[in-house]
Image (tube, rainbow, N blue to C red):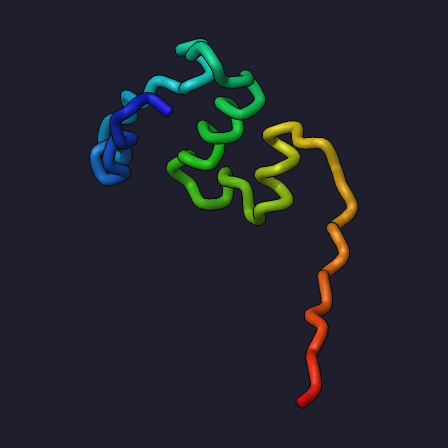
Length: 77
């Protein structure tokens, strides 16, 4: 999103100088997406989204039913 990797977690654990993306107000990205990425970069694992569903909720993605699987037609000899 910024063009640079996030700060290394070991460095952040000593002195956390991470500036949240949502505070940077980066053009072209929703605040929900930026906030979700910030949460995913939390130092403590328990503060991060625990599943892709949790992450989707943080991004405020609309809920959709899964598309049905297409079955491949098998041709006989």
